[in-house]
Length: 337
Image 1: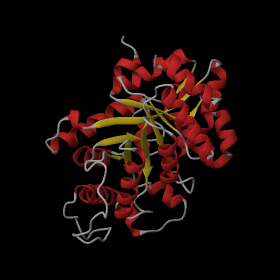
Image 2: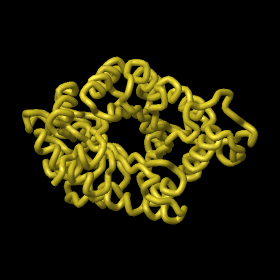
Image 3: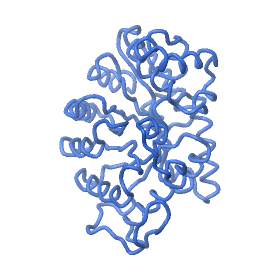
């Protein structure tokens, strides 16, 4: 088998629970080691992805910068277009901009907006409005996000065709993403089995729109934890995995090939016993199904399965390892070499 370097792009995804200055340093290190992309999310009421991405843009020169993803319910699509255009300007055209309607999260935070019942409509409208504003075309008006059809950006974007990604999970959203967007970013906890199914759904959308798969970027966050110490790497993955097993849509777990009883136990443990105990009692087999955790050899073998399933760019996501800086060095020098 050829090396991962020859088969796919490598990116990192840095969670917004850590200080912004550390995120910037991690992105700088990744750039110095030849890693191609750094993606930042916007989760709950955590650090702003827009602000952190702007800081990365100013502190780096060539690494691709991804927003993965921001919520259209909190920012009108016109504001998202303004922010995306500004970030692409600051970065010299290095931005990939992702949006995603985090309905489950918003309801958990007590949001009660009627638009939460229409996430597919909200996503399609947002993508179409942003693209129209960037291209200087008539803007789709009405719907969930009122805007004048003659609205326009008061500056010329660095790129009229800024790549827009969607954070999609279920079948309808994945198919719509294939129809209207430039790429998909699969979510916080994925498996090769789910990736394979998601690729089929995106391809169905591409076919319906008469688009070729070469026009589309299929990427995803892979929960990675790498270290020379295998046990330490796998232990570091447990808290994040326990969190996502509690919150992800059933389709993510049902298509993974995981033991249903172990998944059900993990879903119950998090709210009933708390994060720490849920992480401790997590079945070891779930780490094997939903993460790439262990030594560099372990992680390389596991990421190859995600690429086999269709990912064009696995994004080593969130944990990275017991020591994030060392993990990035191992990813660049041993996993992806």
